[in-house]
Image (cartoon, rainbow, N blue to C red; front, side, top):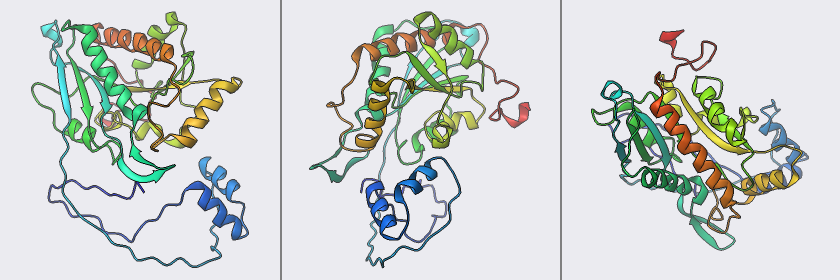
Length: 319
């Protein structure tokens, strides 16, 4: 399967050693659990809600011979810089980030073994390019760093490296605006914003989205731990305010809800995350207008974003 790879950085650190870890696709797990006198679907539902569950024995014996292969790879982050116009803010860049990696080739699904990663996350690397084209070299008061980072799917390696290795040309940013699998499958009426209440960036998001008729809300699925699973997180760990976005929907909207669930069931981290996805291009254009305006608001603001006093992610030194 596409996930059956573990990556470590070749920096001389001791490599972790463990027994093999096996994953089951949900339908296979359900079948095995049911054959063992359990309710497989109920177990998956309770697991998704983070509820405690008792162990049970599987009614069968699994035997396997496992072979491992080791090889070295390199993959670069790609950076660009839109210089700022205010010398007093030259050391306060805003970072726009999306990840350029997918899963490549893996186990075939319905005869297709190319894991394209169209909405996760090639479309939003394209957003960075569209932003740069739209600016045409015209900067904001603050510099803007555009980063297409590698190895997000393998443990945020690209963004971790970038966060840990600032340079004079790309110093530690004062804000991170992350783009990852937004999924424009239906009109942009609601924008779910990760880390919405953690910093003043949340209010800036509301100020920009409100006049556009876009409602802003926090993450309604915290059990999925999305906050720590994308490229803004290494910067938040350093104390940098950040936000990331998802297209939200109301549960009362059956069309949007069905599109959301269908994408996760049939396309997420699968070869079918490709250009056959029924994208709402007007919704994507609406998001571009929002995002470009948000970058301008943060890039031109008098004050840099600040953590809110009650944020659990606020740097310890500031608590």
